Amino acid sequence: MDKFVIHGGNALRGEIPVNGSKNSALPALAAALLTAEPVTLHRIPHVRDIRTMQRLLVDVGAKVDIEDGAVRLEASKIVSPEAPYELVKTMRASSLVLGPLVARAGRARVSLPGGCAIGARPINLHIFGLEQLGARIEQSHGYIEAAAPNGLRGATVHFDRITVTGTEDLMMAAVLAKGETVLRNAAREPEVVDLAELLSEMGAKIEGAGTSTIRIQGVEQLGGAEHTIIPDRIEAGTFMVAGAITGGDVTVTGCNPEHVGALVAKLQQAGAEVTQTSADSVRVRAAGKLRSVDMTTEEFPGFATDLQAQYMALMTQAEGIAIIVETIFENRFMHAQEMARMGANIRVDGKQAMVAGPRALSGAGVIASDLRASASLVLAALVAKGETVIDRVYHIDRGYEKIEQKLAAAGARIERVE
Ligand code: EPU
View 1 (tube, protein in one colour):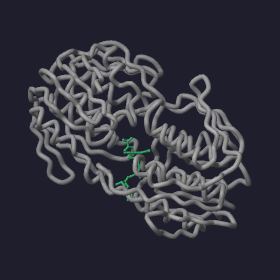
View 2: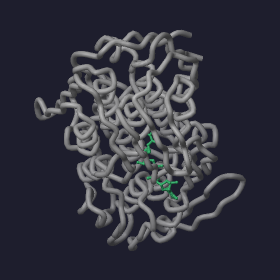
View 3: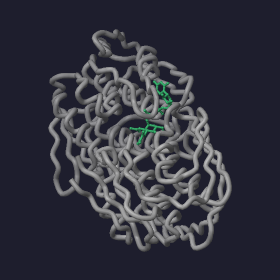
View 4: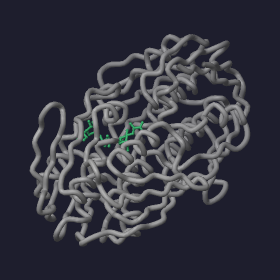
């Protein structure tokens, strides 16, 4: 199992490029199951979750080719509409194939995801939505079995809580349903908008993506398309925090500044200088002291839960007390204990964490519990005195492509060891 060995203390300087968005690429890959024609996707990041999704698509019957950095998918026939436990347990986003498979093949068998390091993460809303669209759903032996032999029919689905992949799953089911589907209290994340754009390029009729009401007119069939995935806003945000926490001067390139607005506001309030240097780059400079600023995670356009851990690392270096409230997941503070082992002063009480700073961090052996927690430990290690060894970096490889090389190119002392 790989580890990262990090020696803290260097201010990061220079440009750090971002990849395509993992959380946009995952539903885009699943969407290729909706058509027999080829779908070509550009800017798919080379991360482990994407490889898992590609394996799943191959199992289902799709052809997946990688040509000149683009991924070409062709699902001329669905051979086995099933997502096995072995894949779903390593990546919960596998449930994104549920909607496309029922819509295209009239049935699907998808393993129920089990528990997860950040919360219970049920998929009851995906199931509820598909039932509204007329799918018959049964649960047995740890699997969801969905059937709609005569096709799905449009309906109004009101999500009683906002779900990102739930919205995406239902959108993909509804594009081939008969008649109109209205998704209410839909997620407004940029990844939902990106998926709607891809589906529209494939011939779907979708209005309102990016707002909380999405209207979909079902069509008989979809065709192929060629699409470029949006930049990864969480990777961009992670590098912006890396610039700020090390007192450096980092320009994050190839990003969409509109997607990181909530983080920019917090960084500015904390005393960092943030400027948009071009249509797709943001510069973060933090020469002076940082101030503590409270933060509550919210759905987009609020502060992303996927940047909460990284923000907590930043607040260990800020003057004062910051209250961080996690509203999306019930158990997403596992990094706090690891940061405490590095000398941070953090008290967790339910959904709330109190971070008192600034504290001089010192290198220690720490364990990454999930993807974003591991990113936050890398950030803490960049300012810790001495050596930090981060174990189980396979978590970080699920969502960040070559993070150690990107950070090292900006001056970090980080290496991967086996
Ligand atoms: N929820 C339910 N029932 C459902 C679905 C969700 O109760 O059927 C709850 C969840 O348990 C959670 C909340 O609703 O408490 C929001 O969950 P959501 O469904 O929005 O999360 P997700 O779609 O499973 C995506 C991202 C996550 C990101 C969340 C929130 C992908 C592949 N994953 O997950 O990304 O944290 O939205 O923004 O898009 C990550 O990249 O590290 C990551 C975890």
